[in-house]
Image (tube, rainbow, N blue to C red; front, side, top):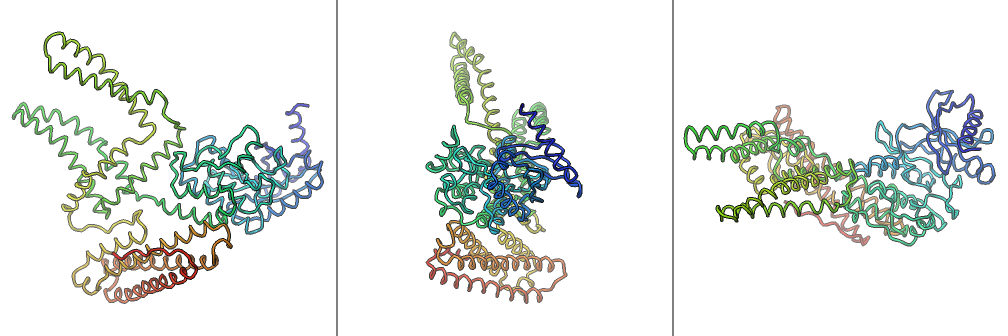
Length: 633
């Protein structure tokens, strides 16, 4: 019997066993653990995915069969937004199978194979959602034991990551040739050795999955499963940062920590891993639309107006030269290539300043756009190391250009005689190769990096951009609007907005409000101190192998929770001040009411400072390194 005939007979027999309950539509995929079918549940009229376990394996081993049913039913009790729910675990007509919700999408493995590695932002989100799913399962006493890209599904409509097959691999006896359960490329060292595993083995597998998701390759490869397992136990994986990827340093370090050989060196739990990933996502805040538009369009001299000005410049210079003088023609041309671009840049800078942005806001905006461009290039094509031709072309362009320049100098020094013929021949011979190889080099370079953004980044962040912004700030008119909340830390944006609203108040109102700017700076310093402390506490908890490896683990978690609550209070106080100042400008609030509120806000700052002092004493008692408090501005 051929494989196709066996498949057809299995399909028909399975459909016959399910008749009246499920109507099978087609096969979705197959692997060592069985076959997945798309079906419709008749009673509820909904699409489901049915995974049929290999009949020959389960029928031959009654113990394995009972174990699978027990483990699968335990996994069916899991209910979480990032876990594919199991509706039923059944044994019908000699077939053992489980019914899952059908989710339209593709596996993480399929996504990487079809479109290349994920960007750092998208990958961090997927990783965090998978960590949330694992944290929930671990809290219910369920260890996955086979976390890998094939078991993470990306939903098409939402992009949500869902984890499948909790506990199923071990329960179904899906082992390697060595009898070790799991997938060798994503298996923890202790699992490869056949030892007892726990939740941190899942974190190792998730780290290997993240390595594959960001790089497109697994940490360890080998000709046989045995060779891969041996490397999992004895070899160190390459550091993710060493692969030249556009992955933030802290994120790469977090992946490396998950791949630690000793489980005590991995994050203590999936929940702490998810918290660290949340911090990484917060640090990649979206750049405001106005800055994105400036970086990509309005800050560049590449629009239609530039083309029109370029076409008009030469006729204007020619007319000035013909009807006035040659000097006037040169002056017109010089003004066109210098004054007009400067005026355009001045207008773009003034527009940003009126919206409340400063020159300092440009650096993170350009940096974000450069990083985004790298990620887009990496996602569109697999750009490997430069080929031999790509390395040679810039050198050919340079050599040809030098030859052309030498020929021009030769013509200038020897306008007559045989030397002029040689120089002219050199120019004619090398001008085309210089042009072609130069253009080809630029095209290849543009294929690997966003040259336009890199060029304008140097213009705006260099001396020219600083001078333009300084001049535009001096020339800006009154009535500047409040600044938009940007990618700065929230407390800094709120403080800047409140200070500028305060500066725009009449002198009598400012006098009645007392030294409001000092209070705003106090609140900003408090928030910055709390934010630094929060990040340090999160890293310390993530570095801890378990509760026993960090002294007073529970106390440290309590300190972290209190810090997060006080940070919300301080940011909320700054937001309220800003809103009250806006109401004051609109005439819907009074100075007296705002003054009363400022007294309450001052008490919030005092409470934060007392909290920091008290926590310093507690942390010294716990022998926990102290976070330096920033010096007030």
